[in-house]
Image (tube, rainbow, N blue to C red; front, side, top):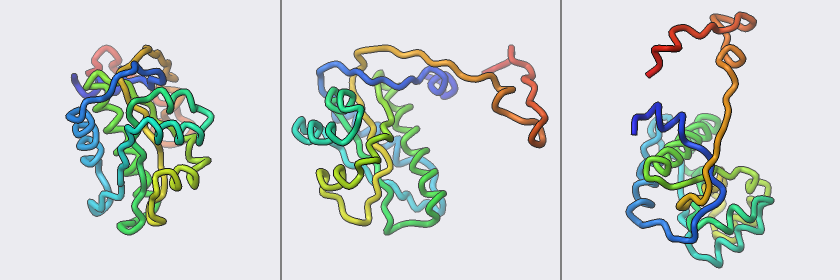
Length: 180
């Protein structure tokens, strides 16, 4: 799959088939995550792979999206590791890139995934369940599995989002027929 095609066709999937994710896929997803860019190459992310049904059930009580969490055969909790902190904002941005790499890897592998952020409202409970040290700050949980649904999505037009040279001058889309 070409990168641009993957970016444009990936969607958040919130319902999964009742079947496990193969370990070779999990390794591929984690590997994609670790190859994200980071300031000074500090690689501030840490991942906890969760497949145990009891742990997943406990984590499902930490979010309004409990059906998504409970229905996923695989969760990856993504953390900022404070012991390698370079720049807080840049490190969080790097973790966002890491998560996006994992989402794109899932898509290429034919898996569904969704980036869960609302669970951050219960980060202390999540950290307690996962027994994380204080140096780990929860950034997201990614739910992954074989998709049991498809999803569609719309995007705003470029001229609603992009300015040319400075604020107030709208970007005009050129050569739309020549997209990659």
